[in-house]
Image 1 (spheres, rainbow, N blue to C red):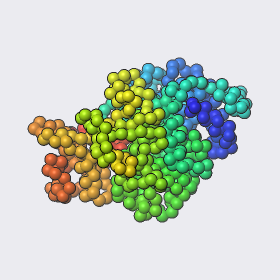
Image 2: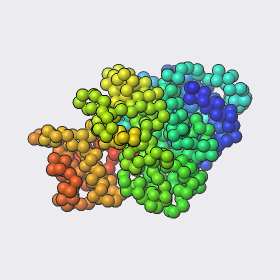
Image 3: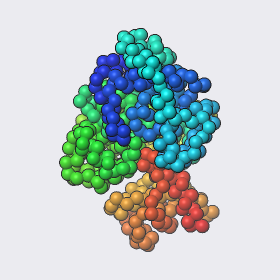
Image 4: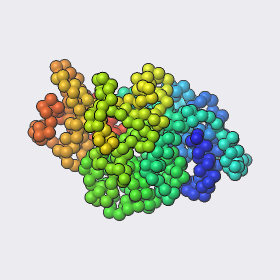
Length: 504
C-alpha cells in the first residue's frame, strides 16, 4: 500500500484519536485533523514544478504533515539536514536531485542562522495564506469514503520512491538514498510485529525526519500502528525530553546511545516508569550505558542495527530474544548472511566477515548514481560495508565498519576493537574514539582521541593488557568535544581533519 493511502485509512478509522502531540507548539493533532491539513497542503504543493520537493523543517506536526502532503500531491519529499551546514546541504540536495522548491520555516532559519536560499518557501506563510474556502473544501473532502479519498490524492506503485534521504557523510560526501513505499512499508510492518506495538502505546518522537531512524521508526511506524507520537524538535535538550517522557507517559523510547547518555544524566528515579520498551540504534551501545539504565531505572536498552539503505531496521533485540552486546536477531522478512571479505564465500556460524542483507527493506538505489548502486547491490543483496558474524542462535554481532579496519605494518587492525578497550579503560561517560592518519613508513598511524585527560604513557600501559603492539595508538589527542553527526554518531571525517591539523 502507498504510505499516504495508509494514512487516509488510519485517519478515517481513528478520527478523534491523537496522532501527534506537538510539545514545541503545545498542540495536539488528531488523526482527523492530520488528514484535513495534509489535504490542504497537498493542493498547494501540487502547484510547484518538478517531481521533488525539499523539506527542511524541525520535528513538529508541521513537518509530518508536509511529508504526507508532498506524497499526496504526487511529489517525492527530499529531506534536508538542517542541524549543521543547512545552506550547503540545501544547495547540495537541489543540485543532486535537480529541484528548486524547499519547504522550510522562518523561525528555523533564524534559529540556525541560515540565509534564505533561492527556492525556499516558508510553511508559516503558506498556512496563513490558506483561504476559508480551501479549509472548508478540505474538511468536506475528509468526510468522503476511503475509496473516494484515495482517488483525490496521487496514485502510484509501491515501488515508487516515497522519500529521498541522504547518508550521514561521516566518511565521504552524502549519497541520495531512494526508499520506496514498499521499502518503508515492509520495515514498519516487521517492526510493529517485532516490538509488539499495541493500541495504547505512545511513541517518544524526538529524532529528526531527515534521518532514516526518525523517518521510519518515529514517524511512519506510529502512523502505521495508529498510535500517538509525541514530537519535540531537539533530542539534545535532555532535561526537556526527560520531562516529556514523564509528563506524557510515553511507552516507547527510541533513540541513539548519545541521546540516552544525556537522558540518563538528567533523569531521576521514576522518570521512565511509563516506558515498556527502550530501543537504541544508529551506533554501538556501550556496556556501561546498558548497565547503568538497568541499575538506575530497571530498564533494558534493546540494541538494534540498520542503515539508511535498509529503511533502516535489519535486526533488533527484544524482551523475548535478547543477547546483550549483540545487535539482535534479523526482523521478519529480512535475510542476513556473512561472506568472506576476500572471496565472497558464505561463512558459517561464528565466522567473521562482511554483513549482507536482503529483503523488501533494501533501497531502490542511490539517486543518479548507477555506479555506486551497482557496487552495493548484487543479486538483491545489499553490502552493508560492516563486519560482523551470526552466532549459532541467529544473533547478529557487529564488529565495525569495513572502512574502520586499517592496515598497519601489513596487518589489519580494527579501530572499533581499539575503541572498545579505550571505553573499558576510561570507565566513564567521556567520549573517545580512534582515527587513522597516513604514515609514510607503516601506511597508517592510529591516534586516540579523548575528551578526558590522561597521559599517553598511562593509556598505553593500560591498553597493553588488551591489545597487541600493532594495534596500539601512537599518539593521544585531547578535544573538549568530539564532532558529532545529527544522530549522535561521531563525525570521523571531521575528527580526522582536526587531528591532522593538531598534530601538524
